[in-house]
Image (cartoon, rainbow, N blue to C red; front, side):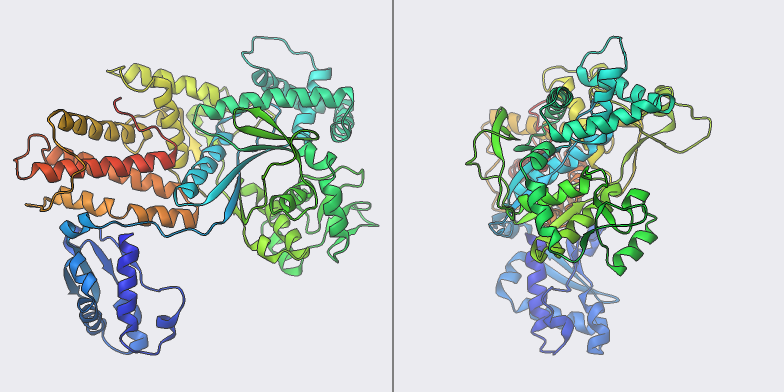
Length: 626
């Protein structure tokens, strides 16, 4: 990691000035390294001198000169730098000796032997998946790939809420609402049935009472209704897995919510919570008979500021007065198991391939769970329930586990006015976006989007010898959902999503295929792309810009893994593809002068290797040709 290496040397130089300053002795280095936008300002730059000016009571330029002098005394620093420039008001600009850099082997920092459990997707098993669900899955799967790439042991969970209101609504529909028509899959049938059921509740209030009966049956199990629910859920889950598999998304374990309840996980958690002062049963008021988790004064203020919904009251209900568990209650028990803190375990069965599921019977000797850290990918609307799980862990005395529980929050996907209009939604109110609603049957199914995108790709392709149009379509959709910052609400527009130029997944694939084509032709001429040139005869701006960006790849990987930001990898990959295409256009490779050719072929290979690494982390294919 080049910038990490430079940061370390500058930190040493600052410390060697001998000043007894808190900012110098801090455990976390305050030195910031960046790559200037203009090549004229160096390959890397630091403003540390300006940060220290007030504490040292010296002009930034003078401090920068002192740091430069210290750096020049560090022998290995001299080998990798061609020069150091100090420019007003105190920037330290560093220029890399790229010939020396090419001979260096940089590595990612070694990870601890920690095991991380990542939970993502977790779609209600009551109807087909839509594009909002897909954003969750793409974010989660990319985090899995990212953390595995930097060295962590990662286990992937998909939580199946087979006891929730949504499945209960679908079961009510299956039992009481007639629906006919052409549907390719069971999940698509349930998509329409679920919407019809929710509309019927307003007309036939007695159906809403059926939902309560179904919820009780689902939780108890072993009745006609519970079997209908289980069969429906399992069929829909298999279709969800097919949808996600098309985007390269896989899991290690499906955790069924019913297993948590029926195997006594919640009972064990309940007994532990009863011993704390924060968990008690209300005896009066609208929550009479409910078991609730008391909030601290600080948390109550935060909830008030967030204008929490009624079911996110200041005192969180874990068990309703009718005995039905809330989602949060089951989630608390689940997280105690994730950390290996319960004296219970599931039994496991193979579901398909290498994928396992929790069952009441099966193999018991599996090493799932027992995490050191847990990451949950859930949209921002679940921030408060996630905080409740963390608080429950703290109340039970598991402070370390609570600290290592991370909620990767993200903005939901809504529809642009044009996309909403295509689905028949009234857009006369002039909103900038329209929320998808399963209860109203509003949304774009994952399979529908993939079909549409495949058609767009097929119509625009001039060559059919590489990846299939469907594979390219899946890559384009996946990248589109990943490239936005996590907190951004993605306003999904069909026309924009199906573009294949600009900052798109298709653009990255073409760049990789172009590099591969150059290297294939080089090998046909018996040229060796991976041989590191001893000398760089000259360095064009496009070559230097590409080198500089490649040198920051490990730093980008490391930072993205710490910040849990997949979009950081998207930004890096897009810039890399752009810089490579600029290099390809302005610097002939196979037609270069003989003295220049070895370096340019090697640079092409290095760009392809780095872009391929980024594509793998993003879950995109690395095509030999398009």
